[in-house]
Amino acid sequence: MQRLHVSFMRDLKNIDFEGLYKNIILMMENQQHVDDPIIQMAFDRLKPHVPKFNDALRTRMRNEYSVENDDLTKTRTEYLISLRRRVKSYLLSHLPQDRIAAKNIYIVLKRYDKTYYVPSITTQSQLVYDLFSYMREDEKFKESFTFLKLNPLMDAIEKISNEILKNSVQCTNDNVERKNKTEGVREAAYRDIKYFVKAIHFTYESNLDDEEKIAKLDRLIWLVNDVLKQFRTPMRAQTTKSKNSKAKKEAADKLVISQQEPQGDLPLDDVEAKLKAKSDEAKPQKSEDSETNDSTDQ
Image (cartoon, rainbow, N blue to C red):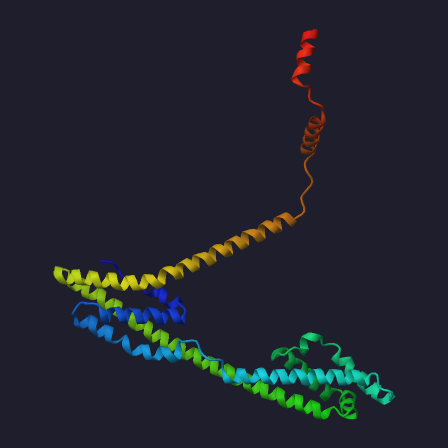
């Protein structure tokens, strides 16, 4: 008996897992399979999983909180750019008090390069957190914002940053919940596909004396294995390809490192041998005619 192996299904992508599962069900429904209560009962356990795939395994739309954060981070970037430009403009003010206040703020702002003024969640949030930390700890820094009438802008930055943080937390919670749901659906479906395969094996081993039934079971096993191979073979080929690519990269990296390593001094004998070889190559070679003439003269 050819045994069926389904453990590779754990490593399939969601779309392939769903495709394999549905193909097995379609094959069983369209083929004249063995009329056996144990196999039929195991097969009936497969069907209820299919509707659950629609929500759990298919490519999902972007989380609504993530979409909202795209707009919020874009707006916050504009606010931060506005803050930096306004502070720099006060550095050129004709009023000495404006220049002093702007300098107090700019001393801090100039520590953050342009990467902090590109739409982002983590990087920009760090900048905002640092600014408000300085305001709490340094009274002169805080008073400079008040003097330059920048507090309303800072309030807007704080408000939008809190909204971004709230959405990020909600998005993370939703993703964790969805991941758990997906893993739960796959695990339950995998357990029942294993039960289905074990039912086929058990029925086969229990009817070895029934040639007609064994022939039908052989046909069923061949059909199921054919479906499995359609997904197992490409996955293994891709795995092998990835391993080979990784091995080639590691070999290339080692070669580069070895070429970069300083070479030790050659032994004295090797140096003399190389110099002698070069000297011999530099000597003019006598032609055959000249050798003949020399022998004639003698």
